[in-house]
Image 1: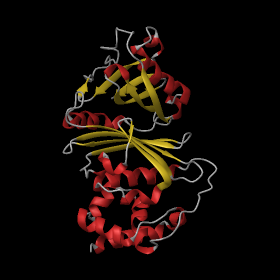
Image 2: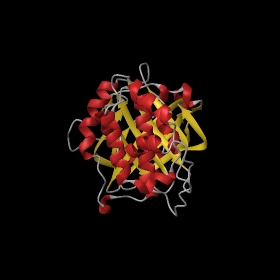
Image 3: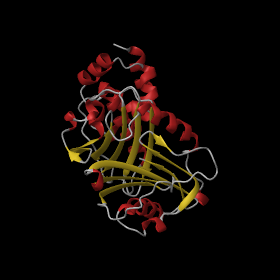
Image 4: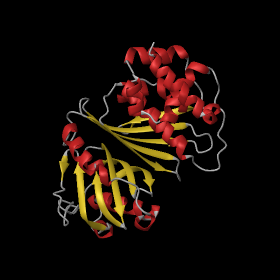
Length: 316
């Protein structure tokens, strides 16, 4: 048994006892099997989990059969969202649902590429060496959007996680996963471009933030261009603006970089429907999942970012 990992967990528990009553626990046997089989070390855990989420992992050693207690929170709790996102990333790293069990509602759904399937049949059961992870938080709808890149997988994954605002538990995990054979797919190139942009993906000062309504409207207007000839007039185009579509990147590092190049000229195409949103006002970002009807009903993930009311980044 890896005692260095256990000692880390015990220390974190001692520092974070207030959260103990909120969670259901997996059995110690399941926990130990995961550590031993997957070979998780202290360094592995600290790489993929925050201290508070690491505490969740080790509570199984102490209180294996504790029942969930409602949070009774007045509003969505960012810490709860963060812990669930960390648990999701840890589960994807391990290729196991065990690490998610403490945060899941009794009845929860798993959606992958716009299809309701069993999580046991999804990409979540594939252990991935994750090179990049970023999570945005929507405290109004109690949801998160997590972007994952695993170059060796190879996978690029976007996941929207939704919570019961009263209980704090996860009620749905909605994933769009791209791999070999997907449109413009090259996880290594995508990772390279994302790392180049990462330093700029920080919370915006209040003066540069837009309203939730404005952020969503910008994303909707962009997606409406395929079936609305006037939609492009509603997009708040800004410069510089860069697009990352699969592994294709438009940015040249110039102040006049634009996201308007190559926008649709044919506006009589099928619409982009069944849209699901996660809006992080502090980041100026909206994640939109949809059905890309004119592309054979493909599952599609888009993220738009506004700064000072102007579109500055778009990822697909």
